[in-house]
Structure formats: C-alpha cells, structure tokens
Image 1 (cartoon, rainbow, N blue to C red):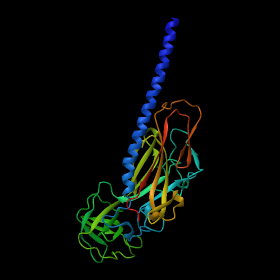
Image 2 (image 1 turned 135 degrees about the vertical axis):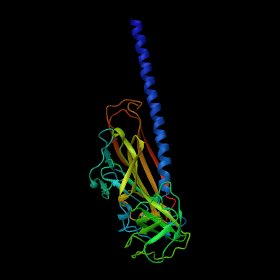
Image 3 (image 1 turned 135 degrees about the horizontal axis):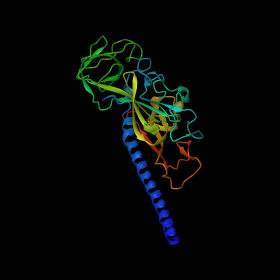
Image 4 (image 1 turned 90 degrees about the vertical axis):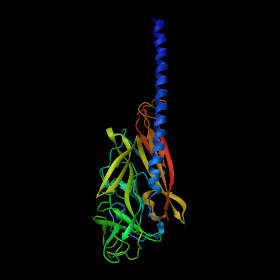
Length: 341
C-alpha cells in the first residue's frame, strides 16, 4: 500500500506537470493566433484609411466638419481620415490603470476618454481601452463610374447604388481632385448630397469644381477598433462600422485585455514623434499608427501560479491584471498609412 501511494503521488505529480505544460503550450498557440489575426484584420483597415480612388490625399477639397456624421464628421477643424480617443489616465509613459476582473466593464460616461467619447460609442468600449477611428472605402466595395453630374443642383448619377444608405459618406474623384459629401437621398442610382458648409467642398449645394464623365464614386465607411465585453463578458477586440446613424459592432478576437494607441506625427511624411490622441494637433499629419495589445491565454495557463496581481507595460501604460493564473503577452505593431499626405 505504501509503495502504491508513493507511485500514485509520483504519477499525479507528472500528470499535473504535463497538464500545466499542455495548458501553457495551448495558450501560447492561441495568443500567437490572436496576434496573427490582429495583423490580418486591423492592418488593411488602417492602410485603407483615406482611400479616395485614383486621386491623392492632399488634393481632397472637402471639409467633413459640420456636415458629416459623427464621430469623424464632427471632430477637429480639417479633413480627417482617422482620429482617436485616449482612455483617461492612459496617455503614454508613466500612466497606469487596473483591471479588477477578467474583463474591464464597458464605460458608461463619455468623460472616461480624452477627448470626450462620442455619444454613439458610449457603453460599447471597456474602461481603459483606447479607441481608433478610421474613414476609408466601405468593406467589400469597389469604385463605380459616375454617369451624370449636373453642373448645378445637388445630385449625381452613378452606375450602381446597391448597398448605399442615407447618411453615408461618399467621394467623387477624377484622379486630379476629390470631393466628399454626405448622401441625403437615394432614388434608383441617383444620389442627392447634402448642402451647406461641410457637406460638400464649398458652401452651396453644387460642386465647386467640374468632374468629367467617367469620374469615380467611392462609398466611404467609418470603422472603429476598441476592446469591449464579448460573449460571456470576455474581454474582446471589437470592430464597429457606422451606417444609418448607428454602429454595428462585431467581436473580432476574444481574450484581448487592453488596447493602447499612439500616433506617429511629423511633416513631409517623416515621423518625428509618437503621441497619444489628445496630443495630436493635426490629424492629417499622422503617418503611422502604433498599436499595443495585451492578450490573455486560458485560465491556469501561466507557468507558475501566483496569488498576486501582475503588471504589463503596453506602449508605456502599465496595466495591472488580476491573479487569475493566465499566461499573457504584450503585442505591439506599427502600421503606416498608405494614403497619408
């Protein structure tokens, strides 16, 4: 009996050790898969920001402010194809926040971000998560030809208006210039665009520049990335798309504890510094986006159990996580904006 108990204890120790190693290996694999998924899903959206057909970014004439839908249509004073919100207290080196449970709850006050979070996003973003906003070509869309542009009035006719919605942003381009507008009515393939300051590239309801036949129309769409509560209240990287006056949120990658964002700004296409969203002076001078993620493995996957909370540094922000026995990894990536000025 004594020998049997000794052997049972030895076998149990081996089993426990092998089980822990298996959990750790599985967690490492799932974290690696999450990192690959982030690169595959987030990178194209960032690189597509500001896509305006065959024209170039710095020839766009429009001013979205006072005419476009929120949040990008109401932020700042110049055309912006990206913007962001910093979670309060997480702006770079020396900042910190604590996750008191497996997943930080979604914030219920716009004051939890700097600048104040747009009301359309309040309640969707976890406390402590930054928010990245992008404006680019709508998902799965292609430029279509413009068949008629009246020299006066507020309409244009395109080859195919399928899938477009009132309130959506669109862009017309002839490769030399581009103008952005908000769609206010759709009748067949005829689009009516908004009038007034900010709705087009001038203060009237007609285009102030001429666009020849066969110009391109490109449907635009706002996209937001942030961490929110997913299925079972699990911390999840979310992607939200804005259409028809509301966001449609989809869970992308579960197990993402934190998202921090810094913006590479400078002049002449050269990055001279990385700053948080509230320190960006000119969004058109952002050339690179630096993203930092904290990704978790399954419960009990850490190599050594700990009864104390642990800390991880994500782009200079210290994130304290609970003692839940999970393996975690910090993943950081730089993505250049293809369409920056």
